[in-house]
Image (cartoon, rainbow, N blue to C red; front, top):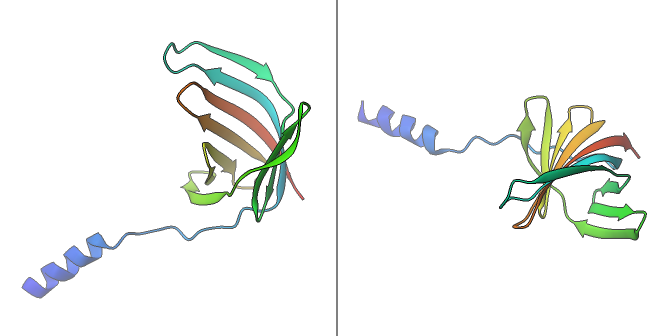
Length: 122
């Protein structure tokens, strides 16, 4: 009986991890942004056309006022109920299963930004 107890305990201690999936090459256009100031909970929204370009090397950002630049590597975190979660530095991305839509959440000590993205495979 004692041997079986150790086996059960060992099985509980082994972490179960989802196998990582590869993020496809994507071009995503930011549609709308919600900005929240954490200390006051004041918020505002605005329309956007910033571009998020995902490649095997990482995430590249650009908009009308700034040329494209490398933001950071992108890492798979876990599957979601109907999609996938990835992170890149201060940003978390929640993609639908087909990688056609995403929500991006950017957090730091001065603001939280939630963005709606529309994506196409490249």
